[in-house]
Image (cartoon, rainbow, N blue to C red; front, side, top):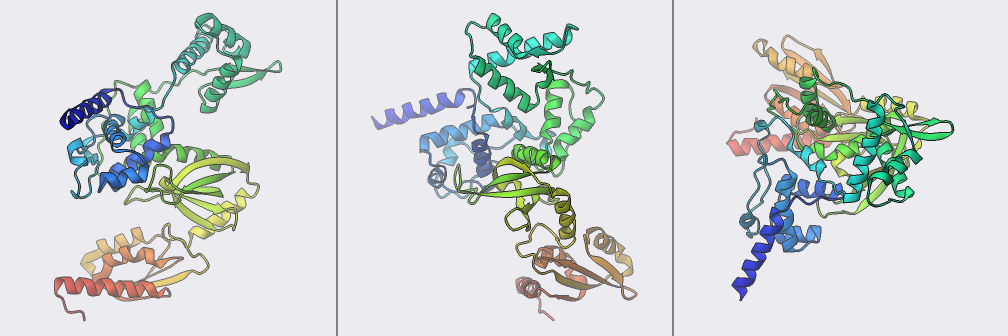
Length: 441
């Protein structure tokens, strides 16, 4: 009997896995699942069930759906049998980004649910407005015209409030434009530009720039037969999942508006983690060249302090009122950036100073060139035939440590007003000497 039950359960799960991918209304759920699967991995299925508050059966169905959310064949996904094994270490969804020229995570944004009536209304409304555009008639329509056309086409008669809601939604998405004529709102669509000749620029933009998903869908729908000529050695995929967050923030920056950020406190622990809401003024985006992570520089409205936050830690963004002092805030942000080495600024009350004297031989000019290229806000002064003094000021000099270590054999002297920097540097040198059996001089 037990074996029969197991077989029935296995058959049910296989049937569910062969269906079309689940369409999820809340994109945040997909975003969190994929981050957990592909970035942090899974040590134990029971632990994951607790984090996301789902049963084993639901988890297994979700695991199968993940492959269908992603572009087929782009990610290596552990089998069902492997994922349920205990004490087998961290299991993770992996991909070699050098093997494809298009970010497969863009496919995830298609996993949005629609009802049959939603789809009918969409096509009927756009069919009517497209006919207006291409038949050399007046290219706009009043609400009553649209409503009457819908009633003449569909078997059911939707309420006017439903039609109005859909029109408002399409206008908000930018699919339909509006104007005021004779005191009434009119609706119209615009001709799409011709994108031929822009293929390579769009392919490059879609993979390298923030909000590249826009370029990706232009290629998909307007240049479907074109193939990208590019492949990437370092292809940062996962910032794509925060595209909606970045889009709203860009609109807020362009219109000088404040926003309410819902920040995930424990973003990797559960489906909808504990949140804290903070009203901020978004200023600028930073993108890490080593990790591809995206950060937002903002001014906190409660204490006027400038801070950074990773976009994948933001749960939701709500646009608020216009900031009258936005230009002043941008000017202050420029001053703040002069003393920010990276994105760590927990304490901005004091600027620390660091000086590092380097000895660079005549045949090591490539080292000097790298120093000049990577110095950021620091200054370089030649103090001798082969000696150079690098000096910089920053809120947190600890951020420089990983960079400083790359010059460790050429450092003659180093000093910093932040004691932990020298302490940590000495500690790492001692550990390296002990590991390789070298006596520290």
